[in-house]
Amino acid sequence: MRSTTPASRRQIRLIPLVAATYFMVSGGPYGIEDILGGAGYARAILILLLLPLLWSLPTALMIGELAAAIPAEGGFYVWVRRGLGPFWGYQESWLSLTASVFDMALYPSIFVLYLGKFSPALTAGPRAYLWSLAVVVLCCFWNLLGAPEVGNDSVWLFALLLAPFAVFVVLGFWHGFTVHPILHRGRTGAAPGSPLGLSTAILVALWNYMGWDNASTIAREVENPQRNYPRAMIGAAVLTAFTYVLPLAAMAIAGLSPEGFSTGSWAVVAASLGGSWLSLAVISGGILCGVGMFNALMMSYTRLPIAMAADGLLPQVLLRRNRRGVPWVSVFACGLGWALALSLPFERLISIDLILYGTSLILEFLALIALRLREPDLPRPFHAGSFAFACLLGASPTVLIAYALYASRAETLGDPGTVLARVSSPLFAAAVALLGPLLYGMTLVLARRKTATANGDR
Image 1: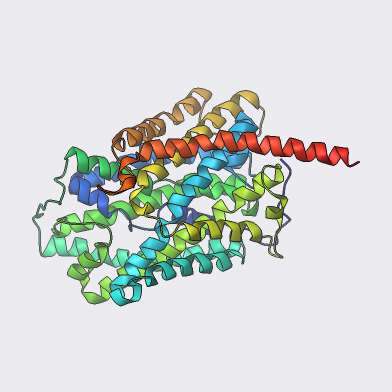
Image 2: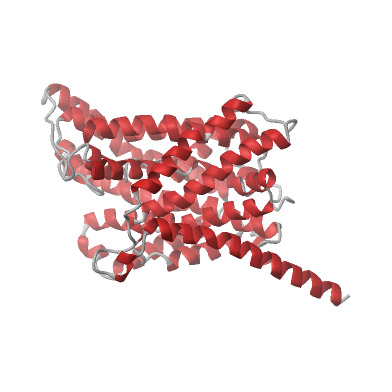
């Protein structure tokens, strides 16, 4: 695939890359509340400690090797295309972009959820959609400033977002050791360890730990990607695990009951530890989380269409860039698609997101193996172990994806009593995935007709 990125005066350095990756994956402890609600303290912390080893670390090692060896714009699409062929490269991109439709609808919702805690009137009625739309528009123009700016801005967003939780953790441990030396064991709405609650907790945790490959699509805008990508992956993985586990540990030590703990509850427990000022700071962090995650992921996803356009799989107009090298047509096209999806109830469709993303992740692990076989002499500044180790890297993520599929087998698209309640979420995800081969075939037919017409006009 030919390069479509002009030489850039500024590139993303290591720390901004870590911060941007952090926002693409985590965005702070916001979103992990339902893990505690489904599993209780001990199991929630265990899940959040085990998944980095079984899910994040294998993925980070795979991405570290491929991003360092092939630092191409389009990232994982390029790896799969090069390792497995054009058909599977197209499927990789299709799965990732369709997963983004379900994924990207969540972050403006987080913004609106926490904004409404300042004053419910702010987000009442149609105002909620307008605020979500404002997040999309803001991030479109923010992304036009360029990837280095998005990366640098992610650093201060990271600091502002986590500052309240740093205070939260300190107060939680101080409160536990000085006021409540004996842990009060509370119970959640779903009893800790119940099959339903535990399965939900694992699915939510998987969702909160996914997205490590997203930073790969901006490889040509990263300074020294061969060196910085492996470091950024490991650094962001460690930060994510710590920022998930420490607040829950602080709550447990402080003796706070997890009864009814769910999305948005951080503001309530922050008030119980530090008063209204800490609650307001945590609410402000939730607002920054929604914007920061959407902004960083927009930077990632909008590089996929231009990589495909460079290969003739999408219209060439997507290749247009502004003076900062930003693919502005792709930015606005993706932004329009996500804006149209904002009103759909995707918040409950985490399993669809997991299935589509998980399938694309499996293709990346297969590409790692294929490239080891097909291109053994490819320079690999970072090596993810021996060939046997590389083959085993994808084992635990694949098992977890299979579990997600099994655990969501009874989930439907709608609430009981509605038409969508008859539609299985896993089957819907499978139907979306199967559209990829059909669209690839149509793309090839159209390309052949265009070539035939051009040859006939000569």
